[in-house]
Amino acid sequence: MQQVHISKWGNSLGFRIPRGVADSLNFKVGDILELNPADGGLLIKKAEPAGKHYALADILDSFTPADAHAAIDFGKPQGEEIW
Image (spheres, helix red, strand yellow):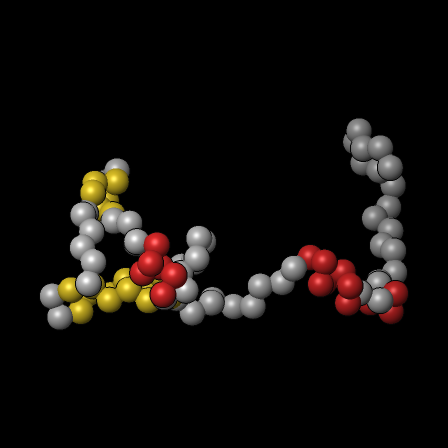
């Protein structure tokens, strides 16, 4: 068991997760954690992803000419637009 100190961070409290603990739990920079009070302590676990994340390169790779729509004519320019 390791002990850590709680520090004031702005209007909140915070502590650092020691490297060994983070490694054993596979916590990485950018992970989102869930914090829940539990039996006088704190339960910390990695949050489930909110949804699928898409990479632009993957989306563009799946694009085919059949997916393209026809050009849309918006009419003549209005005001100071240059077309």
